[in-house]
Length: 248
Image (cartoon, rainbow, N blue to C red):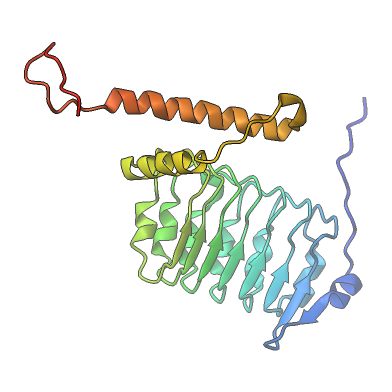
């Protein structure tokens, strides 16, 4: 039985690549090959390795080649929305890199090489929408980082090594299975109570499916909060067990 052929994607020639070079507002050369249906990064791009910016986002790329380190002038690399499950160790040699976006791929913790910690000038790193389940310890060595995206991953704790970075202004860890602190939980409960202050009665038949689902979720959350509040209720006027509580 013949092997099933995978998608070939669009063939990118050197001519197509040259015609895809744009000049940014600050005079840098950007090679924009986004949304081109690329499956494999073509080696002909080595002829243009002097560009400062490279956009390969929104394609079907599964592998970043080892020769990516040849782009020594690269300050901006966008690989978001592909199918990459591992970054090459050679990416750590891109010493001029300021911006790296590998959001919305298939990266795991093992797919983030230790060499990423060699990017000493990196200011922006987006690892969101992947399958990373442990905090990348190597990222803590990037002292110039100002923004880090780790949202929509599988993290179970806040990366404390990132919180210590001297120039960090924004760390996004939203929608990870990180248990909320007691303060966060109480704030969420108060917010939910405020949101249900104005209630409107409607018939089920007048609700669309998404609205019905949202109402059911809010109802379950309110019941959970009420149950939790009852369990935590303190009776400060009880003198001995089974004594009568004085109501005020």
